[in-house]
Image 1 (cartoon, rainbow, N blue to C red):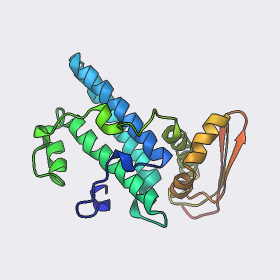
Image 2: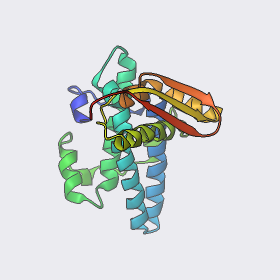
Image 3: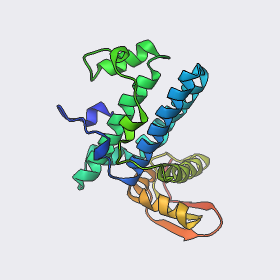
Image 4: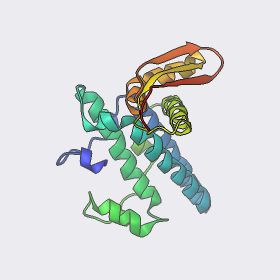
Length: 215
């Protein structure tokens, strides 16, 4: 999916990631690289693999679903480029992090877009991922993932398709948490198929009102 979104010679770097949720992902990725590198330096291979796998599944299950439509392209070219940049950097870095543990699978996936072997590529660094433009994670991806997860659970409980429309979602939480959700509003509304997203200060809660739809 990621490589299919990039045109010939189009491989935007981390600096092209301008949307809050994209920057949040890359900040988390930079932190992962530093943590995995430190774990390998201590010969704690299990920790390095566990943290990398955890990021990889969150990247696939949550982030990819949240930005998928934006990555296809829309009315805002800069927002599209931002999603594609974050997707490309994440794929490139995660393949290098997995290469010591999954040498053949990572090599196969790497060769889809590179001529040289992944095992000849340089080990990633946190500075390479984030540079000076990506600040620390501010919870945008985590908050959006929480809300999307609540919607998925409600749809499953109602035996509805994940593509079923949602009439409204009300998120109650602290101002900081609501600000994080609001920063991912466009992607969240699209991924969750939400008709109306309401943010209210109060005790933490996510209220999902499902539309009448066929399973």
